[in-house]
Length: 174
Image 1 (cartoon, helix red, strand yellow):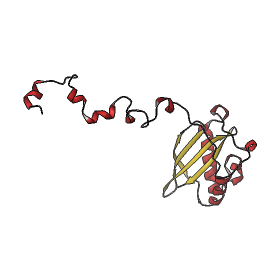
Image 2 (cartoon, rainbow, N blue to C red):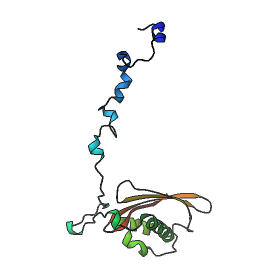
Image 3 (cartoon, helix red, strand yellow):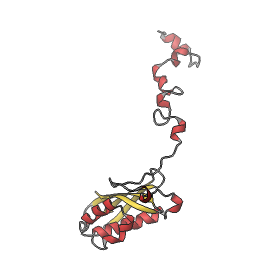
Image 4 (cartoon, rainbow, N blue to C red):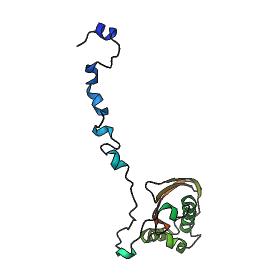
């Protein structure tokens, strides 16, 4: 063990191998498990892109009729489209519009859930904020804060780019 005099007279020296053998520094060693992106993934693996596998909600499709993912260039403007869908879905829940208006752009399972919610709102709320994220290419997740007369609620939705159109695969009013 070094005395206090030795510690004070010696400044930080990079050649001090006792300091470099400290166990905490092992975490930052090059090639260490914790030093690679996302704890253990190699650089080449993290650069590979994720791709969309369309949500099926348990349905099975024949190979020729299965939904296929679309690139962003083949899809309509996501910002405008998701806002329009959100307003339409809220008006459907408040019985201001027929549910058939979103039948083509909503997955069958989600559409049935939306039909069960028709009439659940007494008024169409004001939209306070909308947040969109794109976890992978061709998927948009949306969260909206809604203001009713006396309370604030949230709506979450997921849209997938399938067959050259946005398809709502999840919709939930919280």
